[in-house]
Image (cartoon, rainbow, N blue to C red):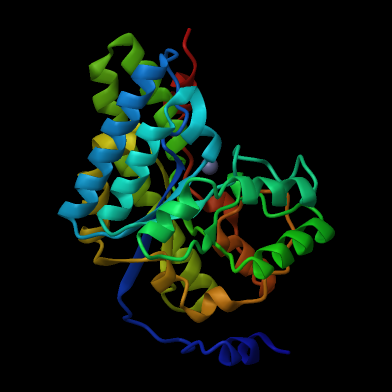
Length: 315
Ligand SMILES: [Zn+2]
């Protein structure tokens, strides 16, 4: 089948222009993503998780942006803080957002068998399934940790089949801004009490984020000849808590409308066959380009500034 036939079959308005931009916001590694800096006591960790999540939720509310949060159950039950952590997750639901499965222990499918990974998915449901039921919502999305979707065809297919049998959909993501790299450096600066560097980092983070949004928008134009709804990958960390308004303002300035993950993934692009096997955690634009045999040059993607990557470790 020719590319144009495939695109037409998938319902693409070929060559159409002028569509609105839309983006679904997703936050990973709840209740609190790992970041650099000093170790926290269990009490500090709970307090930080509460503060981070509440700041993100307040920002989402101010900008009328829905979001989905992907949870690691192991972190929920760690250090006897399951009651407090489940309360944090409930706050996402009360605010009208969704929860998704990010496996029990943030398992890397490239390092374990399909069977072991499937157990990780089931064990990952312990808190989120009853919480979603309480909110009257089905638990529908799995986000693969590291976006590792199976480095062999067998594994990829086995887990895909498992997800279908269990009524799961894959939570894709199409824009990443390496927030975890910035967040690690930010944690180190916070530990040192270096507020000047923290301010500089926040500014650099926002500049880089805007570059990545532009980059991935152009990537989709190159692949599809039109706008495809974006899915933004972020993490539940202090950096995003401290910049949530500015992050959302970037999207608003670029005329993006905030939508849910299911609205974003209702676009025909997301119904493309998912046969691509890779050991890399690529954004979906790159995967679609491979599926459609379109050459794209990932080397054009903006790089995280060197001073940020170098600031990730405590000296
Ligand atoms: Zn993750």
